[in-house]
Length: 153
Image (cartoon, rainbow, N blue to C red; front, side, top):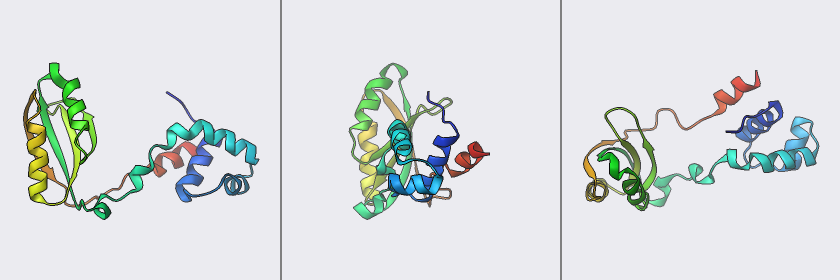
């Protein structure tokens, strides 16, 4: 696991404020050389994650967001995850401790579509049952800025 030094944190905070900044603009803003920024950004590339997070699924015709709690036979977990990942409407899945084995974040065009997605997951061998919760709205969007600010202190 990589840790970030003060310069890395400065760059990440600057990108959080202005994600489309050029290396030259970042260098000027932070008082660093362009070469330093370019080298640091190359090393930070893995930390920046996917640009897909910034695309709103509603704009692609998927206005419903839901979370499906999946209860599985543990010995089949790896195969189940592969099949869940093959469903295009699955945005993300987390393995959990506790009573739920897998929490799957999905999007759908409407309630009937969500019902079909749930049925697709239930049809996977080793899935015992699911519980679906419809998102009523994102209350706290994905963010790292508070952690970046804390790291800069």
